[in-house]
Length: 464
Image 1: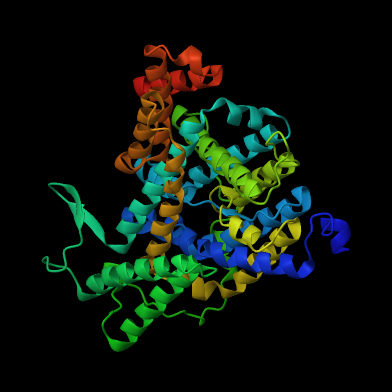
Image 2: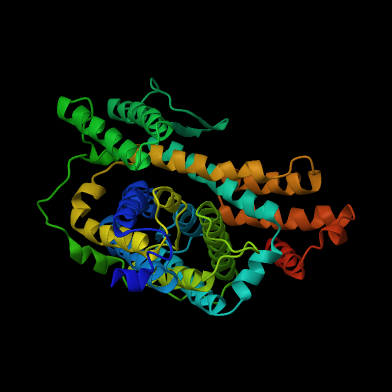
């Protein structure tokens, strides 16, 4: 059955190899189960939300696991590729920090934006539009978006851990261990986060499979030791929660009901909402396509023309998973670059992603464990993922100023404006204007799509 379904012999692989690859992929991306609930619900405490207005982290955890299960399963069945899917890093931060915190939308409206994006992606994936849009955007900006998101994610990790904090004069500063009002627990959390970064770095340098996940777990275990020894004191008022899993309430599967099917379309007809949807579209599009091309190239899956066969099935998997994920209560689902680890272990077919899907499904029953993992333990994972994403900067031609300057503007705008969409806007506008004014637009054959996007972004700043 497996041979008939996944064509193992044709792809020079075996069931054993695919199983190992699937487990490896899961281990390298399972950190999303701990990171996504804390990232997506970060606005709860910042805004002081209470009752039903809060987004339940337990519900987001279950939604994350189910969305990853569905996305990876679709990839296995519709495309037969060893690529796993889950709610994307960067997109979840955009959901919480830009759409909800900065733009003032409720999380229910933000989920509606993800739903609309997913619906549009399904339509685009059934045609050649998605590939056509991808081809119209300069490679430089594709790499710049990845780099900018990497810096943004790393910055969020530094903030969540307390390593970087607010300073009235300089905006940000390194954590002050001796400032008035700083608790011992806050200091311990910062130290543990720094230790976690070193642990994760060493694991990755030593090429330990699942290095990010093991780094998170190691930091968490050190925190538990500190709590049991009295160094880390539980203080709910200061957001220092217990690090010990609470199994007393069971698996809390009912928590999914607090976030599932809560989409609110009340803000759908505003220009801001359209901008939000486009930002989700843009980031997800290039994140998915970039990952598909990069990982498939590593596995020698591209044809002679450099195209990926059955790419429509892969893109459709992403679109359907995003639509379903929004209904369940999580941000945009995308293809994970960590799939490269499974490919490195020999994974070549959808059996790899099927194994990963099953493991995500089983993880639902371990929710008390994942939800007890604190932000200072997940922060090293965020920072290291940021490191991975900024690696795309080596593909930017810094000898060509007309390419490098727009890319630089796009990259720095994301962390400094605390918004992925602003970075995309600045990048597109600057790329078109700089090349148009310097006379290089015709030489580079900038697409009509780029001109349209630049005009729309300028209009956004004029009228909003």
